[in-house]
Image (cartoon, rainbow, N blue to C red; front, side, top):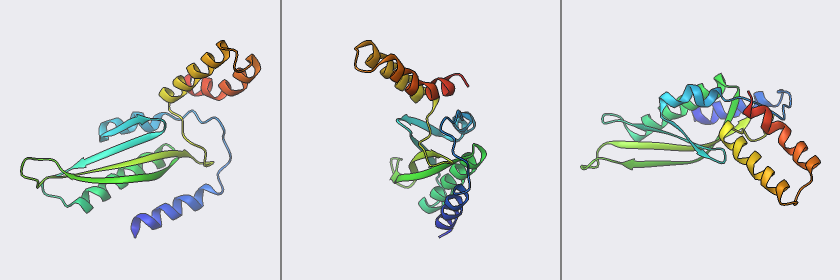
Length: 151
């Protein structure tokens, strides 16, 4: 219930946010790498929590709190894709919770990391080299990606 209330509050607060098409905000990854945050590519992220004396629900709550902390610090929103709970050890008593999520900018657009921006820019360059898009189309589509890479 708390997660739902927090998610609703964050969603309402974004309605007043200004639109920013080119957010170069990579502080999320920098501050989250020490917390078990993993970038999976294509704006897919995960965070895992493991604990011998904690329930799966407690670990899930910890992970959600860390995601909320990181996203609010970086002025981003998140959308949970799925939650996996496993028992990793030989005896099946130590739970591990992994939350898979996507990031959104305050305007609702997908967050693009430097890694994804580089990949997309290289794909656009390849399309231009093959003659599938014009130089003008390349310039228009690559402007935001360049800002993200150079931030």
